Image 1 (cartoon, one colour):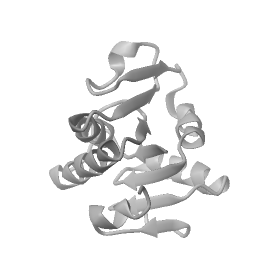
Image 2: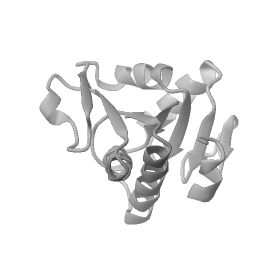
Image 3: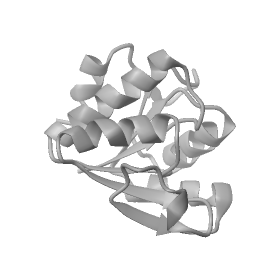
Image 4: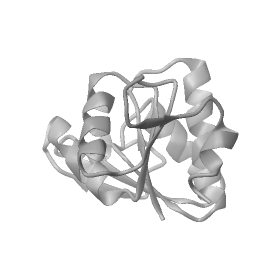
Length: 143
């Protein structure tokens, strides 16, 4: 399974801890983590996945691999800015939204438009998101 992690480059310590724990669960299950490859939520989730030798893919917004966070195994350079969100969502089998602002909202919208399951924790409260409050609740979706 390929699990998409979406969320902001900036986040609180609490939200960062949640992302890291979700990443750990992805790594434990030997799933593949795909994200935007940058900092914040993306970096925290990748750090967690790498703790359990998980494979991480970063769909980068810029023009260089060096932009990727240090926990990305496969950096994919797009030079597409926010348009890369469509690639992240299409690649993922399921999407987990953690925190985030308008970029995350766009990914949620794209995912729902193609009927992808979106799990949300500390994120936008909109119809179509399966809202959860704990990492334990997320696990049931990424068995």
